[in-house]
Structures are given as C-alpha cells and as structure tokens.
Image 1: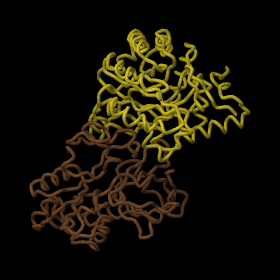
Image 2: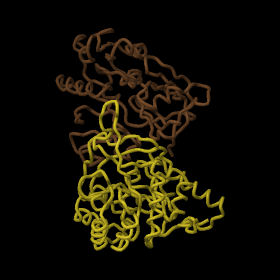
Image 3: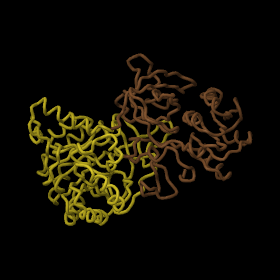
Image 4: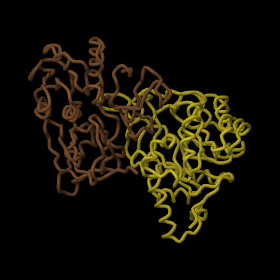
Length: 302
Length: 262
C-alpha cells in the first residue's frame, strides 16, 4: 500500500497535514500525536513582526463547529525561526509554513527570510483570514488582487508556493484559476467561512470581533464542493480541508480532487485526530484494495 | 502519548440549585495533579464539539478518582448533569489535567487567604487540602439558595468565612467585605471567581502589598495551548507568545495578579 503523494515536486509520506492555526507549530500536540507519522505540519501563520491578535472572546461554539476570531496572533518570524523551526526539524515530517501579512511587502519579507531555511518544504500564503482588517482576506476575495500578490510572492519565494483560498467568494473556480495563472504551485482550501453568533440572553456578540471564521464538521459539504470545483478548474494540486474528522471524510476530499488533506478544528475535539484520519485512510485503502493513494485523487464518478 | 480517556461517573448530584457535584473514575490512574488545574469534558451530543474546561475540585488519595463541581451554564453542562452512574450515559470522556495550577510552595508556612466566588470556589478545596499553611478561607455566594456548597468540605482544612450578596448568610456583601469585616490579615492570596471579584482581589492585594495568585477563565477551544483562543493581556511581553498576552489554558489558568492586565 502506497500512501505517498507529491505536490509541486515535494514528496509527502502520506496526505495527512494540519490546518494552519489549529496545531501551533506542533509543540502542543507532540504530546498527543507522533508527528513523525504526519505527511506535513502546516504551521500557524507567521508575520514579519509579532501580532497580538484580537480581543477576547475569540472563540465560540456553534452547531457542529466553532467560530474563531484569533486575529492571527503570532510571535513574528524571528522567534519562529529560532524556536519553532528547530523544534519541527527533529521530526521526520515535512514543514509547511503559513505566511500572513498586512501588505504585500509584509508577506515578501517573511517569504525571503524563509527562503534561507532549507528545512521549510513549502510556503502556504494566507490570503483568506476573515478576522484581520488589513491584508489577508483583502487579497483573497478579488481575483486581480490574488493574482497580484501571488506573482509578487512567486518572484521572491525559494520554496513552492501554496495559495490558501477563501470560501467567502462567489466563484471559487475563478479564484483558483487566477492563482494558478499567476504562478501558484498549489492551492489549499477552504479557509473558514465568515459567521456570527449572538448571545440572545445578554444581547451581545459572542465574539469580541463580532464576526469570526466558521470551521468544523458543519462546513464540510461546502468544502468538498469547493475542492471539487477548484480541482476541475486548475491543473495544480489542491490540499483540501474543512471539518475533516476521520478517514472517511479525508477520502471524500481526495475523491473530490484533493491531493492531500488537512485536519483543522477537529484537533480541538480530539487531539489525536490527525492519526485517526491517517489510520482511517489506510483502513479504507485495505478495504477497497487501493494500492496507490494517488488513484483516489479526483476519482469521483457520476 | 497523552490521550483523551473515558471516566466512569460514580456520583453526580445537585448540591445547590443548578450546581452539580460529580466524582469520576478514569480508566487509568491519573497523573500528578496540581490544585487549580482543570480538565476538558467532552459531550456525547456531537453538535457540541468543544471540551468544557472545568476546574478540578478534589482528587482522592490514590489518584483514581476526581471531583468536579460545576454549574449548569448551557447545553453542555446540562447534558453532563443528566449522567447517572450505572446507566448507558454513566461515563464521560475527559482530557487532562490541563493548565498550571496554584503555586503551593509560595504559600507554604505563611498566613494565606483563599478567596472563592460562586462557581470559582471548587478548585480551592484541593488547594486547601494540599497547602501547608495557615488558611483563612473566604467564600462568596449570591444568596441563601446557593450559599453553603463546599463550605463544610473546606472547613476541614481552614477557617471558613461566608459572604452573601443579600446578607442571608454570613457577611452581607462580597468576599472582600467579609475580609475587611473579619479583619483577616494575610501574607498571600489565592483566588478564583468571577472577573469583577478577581479585579477587586488584585486591587486589595496591591493595597496591602501582598502577592495574589488568581485563576482566570475565558472561552476556550483546544485547551492545550495551540489555538490561542483563551488569552489574557499581560503587562510584559510573554516568553512564549512574544506579545503582551498569555494563554490561559497552558500558561495559566493561575497567574500572579500583577502579571495580568484584567
């Protein structure tokens, strides 16, 4: 049984990754999960300088999922390179660093710093966080803006570039194509869907930011649909995510056209979810006599 | 590797209106637990995904069972309240212990003041049990309906003073009114309770020039320090986050009052 997949020339031992922002830099989950088993650890978004993030409350539970408005709190690239990368290097897993910024130059600064770090296999560019006022999603909701930032990042990046797309758009296929044409090596989707919760007893917003990103099993059908539409529109590989809780969910994304999958909010529900997903994929492959996992990618039929 | 574990519900009874006293026995022996640590309790209702962070009230001597005293605050704790020993719902899934807990060594041999407000009282019990010091324990309740829960348990380990907002039991007013009325002097404070109480405790400790260790709460998701959902503002740049905030779930929930901007 072969679970290896290749994205933009980088080979992963299996397609199971962690969704940015739900796994820190792996440190907190290393007590629960053997990081050596994961295809890749995708880190929490890192910016050129430390970001304090949004006021609390930053999270709220909703039916079948959660809202978050963390606001991309991160320690900045200096601490990240000194502490988080050396930690992750101890493990036999690929490192994908998620990059955030307010301006194109912010992104480029981080991308250039990471270019000197050969342990970083790929870059994932966050142009889809709904919880910060400047940058981020502003680049991800307009095809021209997405195209522009993708081109600029590709000009400076030494590693292959994954553009992380927002579901808060009318036509995901158009956004996927814009990123591909601008030179993106891969896409990841979906980021969270903008939502809101109101505490009716207090007549207050549940989140200090008023709105937040919806994640968890509640969004999975939307994510599967968008992965499918994006996969039909582009030739570059796609990393699919949105509410994945087990191997069956992961296989659904693969069949829709994803080459790899990321586990996000469900890490909070069971810290061992990534391993549960991998075990479930392997079980599915045995049960259905699938020799190569790549045979599953986009294999859904009418 | 650490994992979530199943725990059998041994006792789950209402000890005051909407306040439940639950003893659970995890399938494996618990690791060392510090007073003030908490556990994440997972629910069966799959629409309620996130763990409920609940403070550990007490641990038995051989660390095979632990006690949580919780208030029904929503659908999740309501579901917990329906668990009965020896029926199909007679177990819970838990993660923990989580967080740092109260620093016992700081209070050792000193005149300590333990302050608890409402559903912040439970973690004081294990603290009072383990703390080798002179202990004055002040607990505040809303009114005579809730007054008294855990009072007798706490009285085994120190002198207990009660305050109620309506004056129906003990001192009329809040916990600090009781501290002042009883002229309690202390070298150090440990406290857990609602934010207005903790702010008042912090101001009181500053006024007296003594340290206070306060246990905070915030809406949490992961409980293990990864999601950065439950932060508190700190006065200094925190060593882990590299910004002026700290994670309540892992850097806390107990902080020295002077460290945090509440």
